[in-house]
Image (tube, rainbow, N blue to C red; front, side, top):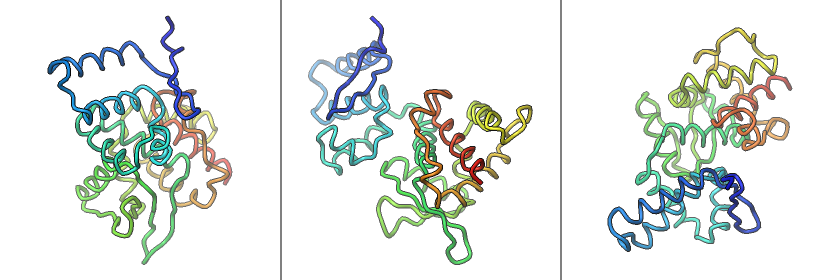
Length: 245
């Protein structure tokens, strides 16, 4: 049977299920390895949440939408998601990269000057991603301001660019180079280095916030047509921004 045919229906929305056989093995392995019945109700909920977000595109949904789909209070769901990332870490680098890429590709941020510094302000509902960003900032000797709201972060633009660079690898650069070159914004034979991307990303963060309606792209569609990584969507948004300038 074609695994791509499996669909999970929640709240009137359809979620295509990837790698259904792998999902089934994961459920059995986790449920039986410590003995049948050893999983607590909370453990089982976190496992199901982990597998649902891993095998569908539901992770791209805002927390309040997921809360409605899963019929779970937002606070409880947020705590489950945080514990999920700690219990099932997987590739946390890719996870943080994709969450941030999706957020920036949809231009879900503000950019403005404050006390002589260029600031980027955005909402991070995912507690795990938020903590990683703050830890990365401390690691480079910078700090983010989240004191006025538990979800919103205010970060100096250059510091945010440096943090995001940490989550990009060579494959990401090659993928973004393909998108930007196809858009006619770069020479097709020129490699996209980290420093070149940083300049493009800095320009995008500084100027795109006021033009969200023009620039925002469909993250799932862009990623599906360009590769697995959501950095494809970010590259598409950057190319669109530069094309509209």
